[in-house]
Structures are given as structure tokens and as C-alpha cells.
Length: 131
Image 1: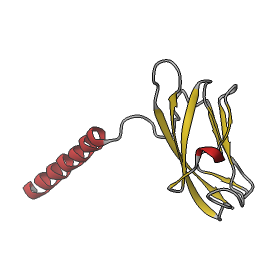
Image 2: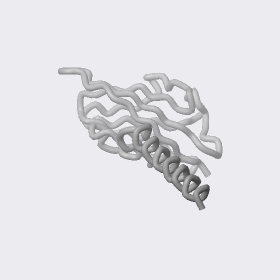
Image 3: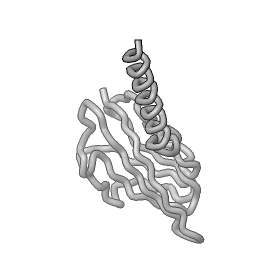
């Protein structure tokens, strides 16, 4: 009877330590929520899209971006910029560094900063799947 109490006490303590460790070492913030300055982006995180899709990022006016797709830095000249609206788009084609979307998962990483006024750097990474 005494061995059972000791065993259950030790199991209870181990469970408590696991729960405390999960709270202490859990990542902060919600990785699913895009930063506030990022007004919109597409394709949406974890979405499935057709091969004709384009990457679109909407930021406030006076921001600029660096774009990396699947570990490949997209040259500035390939990114379509509409400075009056803060919209940036990119689509693979035969003249771009990535000629087409391959079926499967793709990772987009965008870094931005304000080009006038006080700096406001940030970044966001998301994935999507091409059918």
C-alpha cells in the first residue's frame, strides 16, 4: 500500500513538472497572427493554391520589402511595387529567378522597413501548398 502512494506521488510530481515546463518554455506570442503593420498577404498561411498564384503583400505606404521564397532571394527588379498603395506582388514566370511553382509546399519570408521617417522593421514567414 505504501509503494502505491509513493508511486502516485512521484507520478503527480512528474506531471506537475511537465506542466510547469510547458508554461515556462512555451514560445511567446501567437505565430499564427501576422504583425499589425502587415495589412494583408496572400496566399494565406497553410492554404492550397493553383500554380498560377502570385505572392501579394500589402503594407502601409512608405514601406519597402525584401522577399525570399524557398530560400531564394527575389531580386528587387522582379517585385512589382505600387508605392502609392503599399502593395507588392511577385509571380514566377520564365523571366524570373524561379520560373514556375512546383507542386508541394513553399515558404515565403518577407522583411520590411519604413523608407521615410522613423524605422519600423519587421518580418513574417508563412507557407502554402501548390496543387
